[in-house]
Length: 300
Image (cartoon, rainbow, N blue to C red; front, side, top):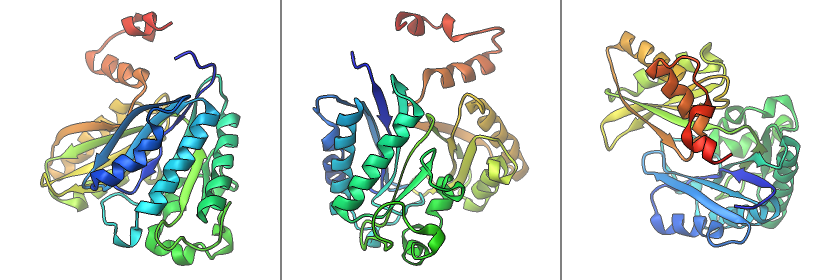
């Protein structure tokens, strides 16, 4: 990949069950010059699709706008149910600078996409994280509170007027949050209990808003098909709060309820440094650095 500028985007769509719809939403990222589809995964319990794509900023922008339009056309949130909070067909669209781009570039791109989808699809847009127009809009959880159902009234409040588009929830596609942020690791830890109350209790203890880890957001999720629950985590800055810290804190809190961790998963892609850091911790490596990783040296 010889691009001088590389921007990443990880759009989340509220469809994890209908494979035909998923294929249509992902299609704009396939076989496009200046765009490379890295990964996409759908979850039946969450009823959610997460796409990871990189590209040259202008080409990536057009592909993302097209995908959002398809989601608006295909997804009706009046008939959507899932474990993951959602307020829109295209729920959240973050841009992440990777190479030859700055955070300011990512913010500018998010604003361009927001303005375009609002005009083209009559879709209300909230800018969040680094792109937020006010401090109370930075946290995605605050923006999404109330979800699709509650947004019909919330969006009419002066403090929640959208940054772009009408101050009225789209009747089927809801609203969308678009912004710029650091690389995020979606990391889920599974528990051997069907009790959602326990999963919620552990999530409240480990997340920053509850007095837990600084760069950790978490919630409890029920995995009905497996008969277990999950602490679903977003690590918003893995360089300052490591994955192993989240795992160990979940284990610690789980003991209070007499339950065990039975596995974990990463959704989408993850920076190599996040895994190396955790591997070094569990192996007890002293003075280990990324420079000792063979693949990292090859790619220099």
